[in-house]
Length: 355
Image (cartoon, rainbow, N blue to C red):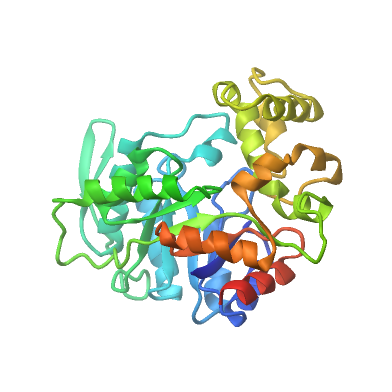
């Protein structure tokens, strides 16, 4: 299985991209969460100029964040800096919208957005709509401005539901998910993608969809001899992923109600510590600061062992390879690890394990 990393967009991120390339990792991604992290297009521009081989992805943008012309211009501009190395991740904006206090967009809007991006990034015209006004648009300047010749890879963010997987199938795109370690769930996503793709006509001239691969974002911690699998080191390495689920539960009472009693108690403690409630109109301003960053020591108790086991890979080398093999057999092509404790060391550990 291939390996890559995903990090927050910020100054200096290009140094990590260079190190990831030196280690032989396959891809380097940045988040697109505007009110939490830096701008992904700025970050990947720096990475594109500093690297030569590694693939560069945005995971993920959304039609609720950017218009199709603006997003296409960003990706095609990156493609001019790093020809054929760009991955466009697209989703409904689950987190990036919630950090604005807004709901994610719909699967239909997502599909329209991807279709427009694929057309524009391939140099074709596409239909662009604002209200009742519809116009055909295309890049009016290419060449040195943007690259519409080299292929851009498209992937769709999907959790357990089949709707996003079906969008991926119809658009010939790959899949990306976070914390989804159940091989059975991946089989279901792949089935939904295949069923949607069956009989869907493909444009023989389209060159923006060069692969339909599956990426899994998960934390990884290899245990030392006699190390506690739920000790401080393991909690620090995986806690940002666990807290991302608790943050979502704190912001989504209907989801929190589906959790077990221990998990609901953890959500209650998180809300108390953030000084808000599950129904406060401005709760998103208290819940999401520091999202997907290294957790504070005082929050280690929120990193419950069942959630660690469900969302992250923790174990001996043999344990990790066994679980990774099962995921590979379920169709996962690449693991993406978000390193937060000591990124260079964590990237080196990942490379040693998988490359």
